[in-house]
Amino acid sequence: MPNASTQVRTTCAASARPLADYRAWLVDLDGTLYRPLGVKLAMAAELAALGWHDIRVIRAFRREHERMREALTACRANLSVAEGAPSSSAFEQQIQRTALGLAMSEPAVERTVHRWMFERPGKWLRLFRRRGLIDRIDRYRLQGGRTALVSDYPATCKLAALRAAELFEVVIANGERGAAFALKPDPAAYLAAAERLATPPNDCVVIGDRDDADGQAARAAGMAFCHVKSMVVVPPR
Image (cartoon, rainbow, N blue to C red; front, side, top):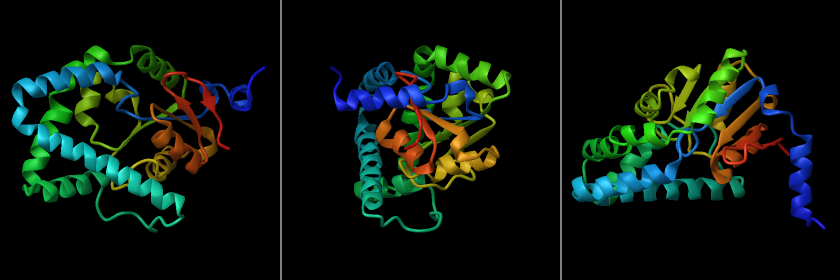
């Protein structure tokens, strides 16, 4: 006999609209458009061999990302999120916090981060991209679907490496021009994407790899969520 959680998941899946019925797909980048494990292992080996002196910067930068996300989650749980758009993007804040913690200049931290997190991974992204999902997004667009990419990090280099830049009408990526949003699970970036696509939130589905980030943001925005591994659409509660 199925337990209660299984029944809830089954009910949600059964009542969800098919993915293709939504007017807009709002897609995460990292871990969604490519399989992350292979990329992480390849870059860890490359970093150890060629960039060992930069390891502390990359580790500190990633720690700051999770700290900022945890702080945001705690604020949302306490209903104490600050009102209004942030004056700088979460990516810029992450650079600033990392530089302060390591007593380095912000430009030096940013150069290191761009080299090891956005430029050098390109060859591995091509190898580990989720071809099935990318092809599915392409078909969806050809059938008239609206698409946006929403990322906590700059996306230009990675989209080019994945050969996926033309799949998205709108790109909202922290650290790039015109994007100054809090990290997910704050829903602001997804809501901005829906607005730019002129599509109401209840007709959007978020496709991502983290329920604690993309999924929570989708629910907060009143959007459906589709985990990239299961491709099961869960409607907003």
